[in-house]
Figure 1 (tube, rainbow, N blue to C red):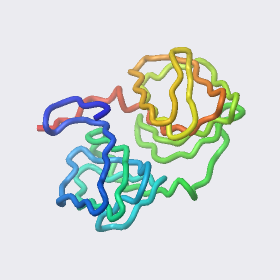
Figure 2: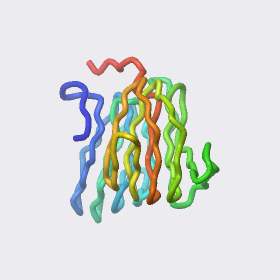
Figure 3: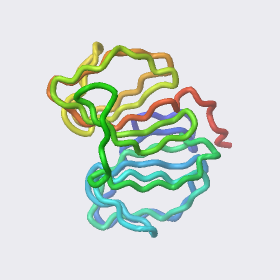
Figure 4: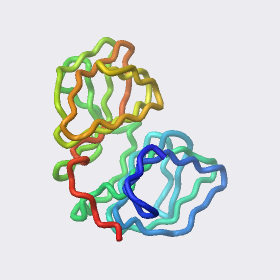
Length: 193
């Protein structure tokens, strides 16, 4: 568990490991679900999702997950706007990269709706970004390399959550690949009753 805001049904960010041969009963996601497959292959009745796959199952969606070989996924629950009903599946090992806002950055957009954006960002070694503020907050998961800012050094596997209004000056001396979600921490909490 990386973050939990609530009781049994809660806004949460977690790493979930499925042992080989794991199955999970069919269930609904009242607040939506998004996940990124970090290792192995995650499956449900709609298909198989190998490492590097990004999936969004919208508010009210249902599925029965499993994993034949086992997997590790980064999962976010109850973090979607109710009117965001687009299901998204992206194989990030094949999707295109686009130039970022500064030299040395490449961006792969994964989803955008209202105030929320999700993307992968690739930092070339030695890249520095200008100081900036996150009015809707920011979450980062370091997928590879080392991400840095004036507050610390964050190697592969690090999760960061910067609240709404926070500011920093990020850089990467060694280069890195990060999963970034912004704008979602200013939204009103969904009712989970």
